Image 1 (cartoon, rainbow, N blue to C red):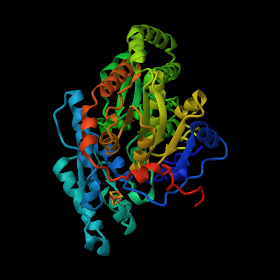
Image 2: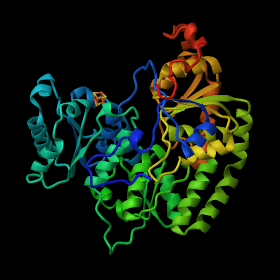
Image 3: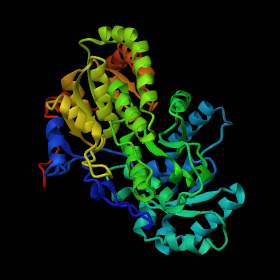
Image 4: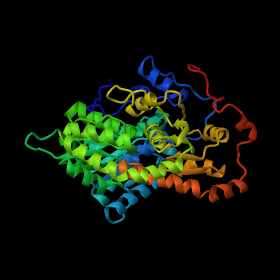
Length: 491
Ligand code: SF4
């Protein structure tokens, strides 16, 4: 098990810390068995298309804290991901009935001359001006490829400014070139929080809070209601939380997450350093995931009876509609393309709805999480059907298009617009899941099933696009092995 060192200002990337891979093809049984025993060797590609960057994940997590500010020490283009982050932030504000504001992410706008002469003065000025203008409660400085390659000493600048500014000044080292696993940026953000914001628990405080690591929190009302039956209150992290709330998360009674990829680092960090237990089951998507997750939380809170009463009532309530949905989805097929936690959880959810998953592609795979075990969602999927076909690739769309062209599923289910658009252009119904709570628990599985039915019923957009669009991928490529550009292990 990796020990999380919160005294260091930098977290090791997932490839080194969790044995994360971005190249694999095989079955879920083989993937799980090798991750549990000898380990999966990564397979490099001899050709890659554009992918994503860990810096965006880091900036958008930290930039979504209501009263903090991010200075991105980078060329201005590195802040491009903040556009999507801003949309999510405003969406979270709408859910909470808050005024619309922008994420507070400021770029130092590194230019060519800065790469020659250095830009620590520019960084110092930017931090001071940002503080003057916005009076944030904390400032995070996120690194970039350029600041990393020219060796900018971000920590020294922050150390000097600590004399002048009486707020936490925290670096987040998320240079994009360091990793192919963009989720390493989540870890960089949560490490910055653990390293620079979270305070040790106060001995005289008895908290009734449960940390809930998520993105926008669309199901917050339902969660608040459910948690009240267990005698606790959720603290949603990080979007729209405050620096003071984050400072106190070490006092919570437990930590849970909507996504194993997102929550593993913070959850295990809080458990290792402050004894806040982290719920390590699969995530609360669909029925069995939600039940296992809630039961684990209920055990930690000694609220088993309340959990069982809730589960029994809810299961009985949704049973008739769930049966109808299953009848309508019988015989339908799907291909999945998502991050690893969502991918393996949603494969299970689709199977709970009676949909046959022909292939589950994930954008990377962590061979273990920070508590030292293979992800529970992977383990349970392997136990259910070890022959399920899976692959791992950092959203290489040429592989996805090839798979869709061969497998011709009824629907392609993904979490990324840059991936779903290809299925639509091929005439295949697609579902881009923007809401992390799309299949959350008992209500979620009904909503999710009904949306899938809608997507399968209304296919005219995909059909008409496919009639008019010429794909850049030729029939020759679709006829090739989907993974013919994946090297053997060790090459
Ligand atoms: S890969 Fe590097 S240069 Fe590109 S956006 Fe990320 S940090 Fe910036």
